[in-house]
Image (cartoon, rainbow, N blue to C red; front, top):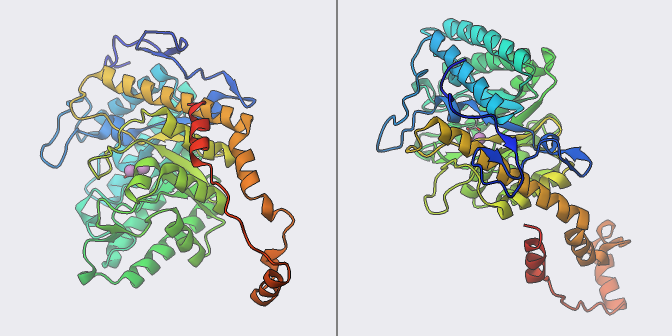
Length: 430
Ligand code: XLS
Ligand code: NI
Ligand code: NI
């Protein structure tokens, strides 16, 4: 045991009336919603990078956090893991997610980095066994080190492609060994800073082949988890190839991977792409590639990926409505890809941030479930499209349709879209 969270109690559900800040008011893990415990609906995960590895920097200032485990030794990496599992226990968090760079210090050579990853994987594996906490997903950090400054798979230098491929192999191995339920690829620098030096067509081919190799290797080694791409339009690069769900779907189709790879959708990335979270979720659901979510929120004024903890029940409810409509999570879950503000220095801040996020998600999911059970939105939608029931129009052709319009004297009458009525309806539940 470390003493990092010394005075912080185990967080329990106390109900909406509780004034105890170290308690859940909405997240009752065992409570049944639509015939399933809330914890199995939400499948919460803590992100290792934001909660334990992020130093609190911003573009104008460096580290603000002074965690006792910050440093480059394996002993400190193990202390970080100890603290991580203490946080999971305090919160009752069932899952976590990591990048290789979050859990072990980089070595002098690739082989040393890989050995360190193996060593920390064993250490974390032991803690998972003791605690019953599981791995939602693992991923490779192919964006922080300077070797990746011009991309990983899409780099103009084939040696960087090779280094990235070897890194992904080692991260799939680690994820597989820890029983990870998914493996994520976020193309943090797979894009460009300027078209003046970029061959977009070539880079896209490299990215496609890289993803095929990743899928081939994962299947060959018997990794049965879901492989997920995480769309994001820009930041850190000016333009990223995994722009949004629609772009990723076109890419997967192009490389024959649409049945192999799904998407991990992040609230802040959806906003950066000029969409809403529920837009991205609804599209992924309708394309059959919905996998998992990175839950956070962006500041509406700042224009970048601020990765804050969610705090709006109405927004989160509409997102979970789409998740429930997709049939809920299978291997996916709710990963808090969210970090503290850099002035939030205290250990308690880290716990309270997660309590708030978990409660907002629980309240949102319950509201979404109630809306789905009530069926008002689905009825309204069905009524809006009712004219299509039994219609053979889509099997027809322009000439036949044109003849029919004249023969039957078709003259459509516009009808209300009822938006305000539906907004009022949603507000009854949130
Ligand atoms: C960054 C991404 C990153 C991925 C994992 O914006 O959200 O944190 O989730 O590489
Ligand atoms: Ni992000
Ligand atoms: Ni993310």
